Length: 415
Image 1: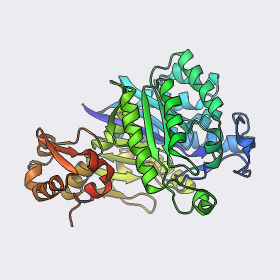
Image 2 (image 1 turned 60 degrees about the horizontal axis):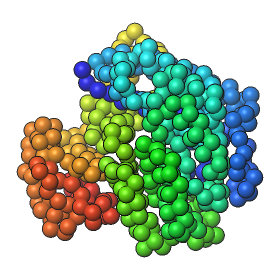
Image 3 (image 1 turned 90 degrees about the vertical axis):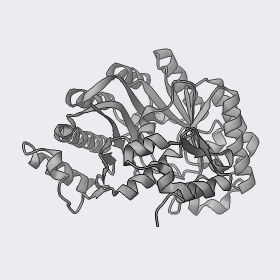
């Protein structure tokens, strides 16, 4: 039986962080993001009746999509479920367990499946955490970003460090034994010492997993528009923060298994590894992406078109369900059938994100030809530049290669 991972997209947030360009939108009234009155404020009960109805309607749409497309995935065993966003923890009590329940009733969910929910500290209550345990969620991913309240305010986060710490301690007390914490470097007005303090405070809590990202200023975000108001770390400082992350986390017992992800032994994120290893995954919800058997598609990113898409699946029920939809192109639904060359490209540039690199035998098993036969010249050049190294039967990034990973990966694209 083949493995499958499921992603569920929850696009709702209290309000968008100043750096965010993800597919998400706020459900609470906007305020001046520069005001510190956001800090420590709980938004759990700030959703209006109108917004609550919109959220309920959206959750019902996802449940319909899960149910109506289930016949297409009867041959798969689900090894991971990931609720991301947006802010999934903003959903009211009962909604998350309802979504997980729909998957349990329609899919072959492995007994040891990894089930993750992302959360913002100021949208979590003990009641919600208890619900998560009851419905089988066994991994939490908490968006801290910084342990410095001033830094959190500057990037528009709604929580402070105290609210994060309270949620973390409550989750531990209730029995959660697999927790990821997200942190960010290169924040506005951040110094190397500031970032090091965040790493120290996070590792003192002993989470099982840490995701560490460098801030990217995306155009058309409020932070990009206000960039002149801040001092951002220089390129050299950003490189020092990057190096500090790996060195310090290693000294604390976290091994780096992917460019931006660190874990204690046995706690690598199973769900994300499916993406990097080109496994089968299906996404439910607004704008969610999927790939099974080298066919890729993305759900509509407009709510009205997404609703139409789900209803169209319903009209096809009894005739193959989602499989019928996915055999034809529509205005809001397009398929990409990956060519052999595109599959090879992805195999290399996704696989090289992982510190273990790419196996030559796995490449041959996947494509019936050798990696050296296909990419021998590229590999020779990159090894000569010191950014790639041969390892056993495969290749992986060197320390220098990690620093210029975008360049290395681009070399595996065919002209």
